[in-house]
Image (cartoon, rainbow, N blue to C red):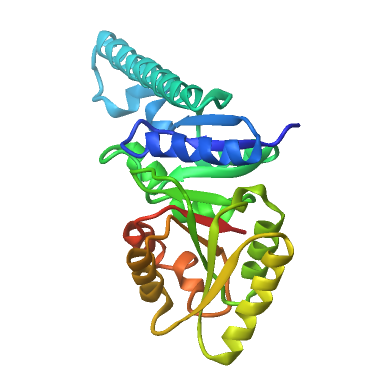
Length: 281
């Protein structure tokens, strides 16, 4: 099946940014987009036995009314989902990108896994709606999504700006080396200014130069720099000071950079980073 970009939209303030970043990837790769809106179980009609929640002797009419309210809630959630997908599809159409909407119900991770067989990358907002189930669906589950994803994940902030300067967090680990190899083979990074960053001394410099050689051999312009101090702090400072538009990193590492994605600091990093993050498995 044809490769596609997957984009998760929930109607939050991040949805437009998700669509625009998905359009950017789609244009760079020459691929269509699958727009996904996933209704959680709480947004679906409850077909269970409602009588267990009622006192003995309650009227049958009350049971029927509760069931009707539950069904109406599910109907409205589905209507809202279709409206969200229509708006998202219009944003992609304005960018001349083909997009197919998909309204699904159930677990977010299971739904994404079903689409990954034809997916090249996944685009998701770093937070969902400010309140309600969708916030947990795209917020507290984001680390779970990163752990489960088989494709690169682009985590985007609420705003979208052109991507011209790319900062790559590279520690020489297996995941980081894989990210460099995939960058070298991808048309996404053609014509972009790339800087490879690593914390450490001369050994780290040699690691960066090997990675730079891989990118140069593929025709990508790349520079290197050594970071001092905690990588998570140094990376953020460099992004802010030099105006980078995208942070790229592997999902796993063998140094402190590992904690940026895998571990308890994941949510803190996503909240702190002001630019999109492309995470390679």
